[in-house]
Length: 171
Image 1 (cartoon, rainbow, N blue to C red):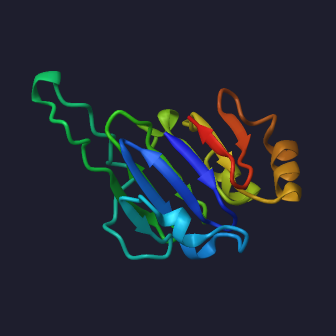
Image 2: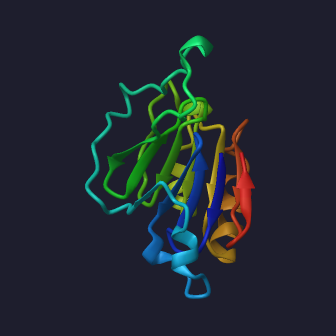
């Protein structure tokens, strides 16, 4: 999985052999939106009405047997977890939650999840008994500083990384 943040809630995501673009219209003015969208298999918005997923019952899909594999990568599912939050499921990849607003991931699968949060408050909401594998914070320097100061003692085994605009993070 590769995540690239372009300001606001704009992300380019390589997951499960597919390229997804989130909130293209939110990208900073310095980025060419046509270039950001080029080659994308799917584009979506965090405020878009998508199929809903029940986070408490959902579990990641497992890879199929090698004998049953085709040359085509499996479909990547993009589902609404709550208003302003999307769950992305690519076979063979950790679950990816993009959270504009706080939501609690399911306990069964959240320890393997990667969370993209846009504020320290949202990042704090996912920490607890079943904390995610990683929180990638896409925010300005002040928000990043606040997150590292307020969350450092609560992280446990969760990695907290700051996304930098235009720089890709390989997970």
